[in-house]
Length: 187
Ligand code: ZN
Image (cartoon, rainbow, N blue to C red; front, top):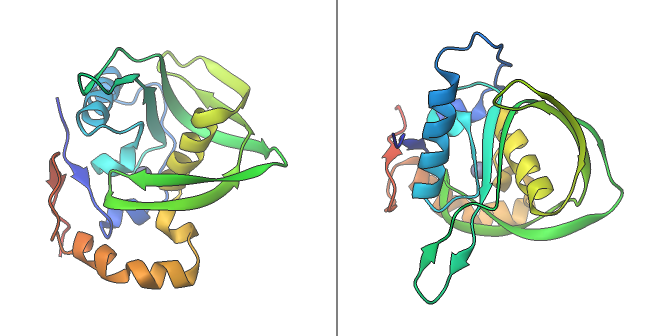
């Protein structure tokens, strides 16, 4: 089932999300719905607060894109990340052009560490403690920000944020068009 996504300015995106335990109701179904919602919106990551649930859970999935047919193939990598904890960061950082399903049509370069050590539990409650790198490391940091009540535009320079102010305000007021369903912000 495709879930509506909340946009910039929604109060749930500003909450610190809570850890969950194994008795969290219907978790398998929620995870399946989050993957479906993410792929439907052409995303590579989706955090639970983006579907209005302030819990420490996110999903990540990478699918090959075929430019000839404009279609996606089956996912090559998928991660369900529960209760993540960043243990440490690598020393190297780089810039990457980020976007967010909750901040439609805005893409900005963000500087982040290229590697990190992360502890988390997966959908079967298996514990992981791994050094992660590449696109997973980038997306994981973006999603953990969501669990801490941050969005990627918070990490931009104040000049950049000032320049984006009107567009962010439009998103906040629901004056945007998306090909996926968004939940209106409470007023
Ligand atoms: Zn995001």
